Length: 128
Image (cartoon, rainbow, N blue to C red):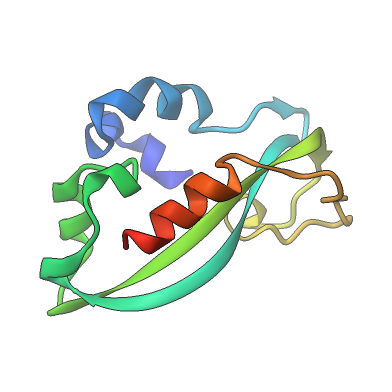
């Protein structure tokens, strides 16, 4: 990930998430393969006025980092649902696969487990 090349990249994340980010910022590698443990599905994309962006309890970045990406009066918010794969997968990625998941082989997502329970996820959606 290109953001990890910045020496102070952890400052973009809330303090309580920095150890998680540091541990998971770059995938484990084995020769040309990378380990994939999680994947995300875009559940919804919506536009919100900047003043109505959800509180920082809904994301891991600092509020100032989020604001640094917003240039207009509104922002598009992507609601992602993150799942853990039943079995981690060693993938031989195509270029940019870590970002966009263009893998050379299909990965089974059967028996995937949501990181947040349905109840917690629905509660988050209702509070956006």
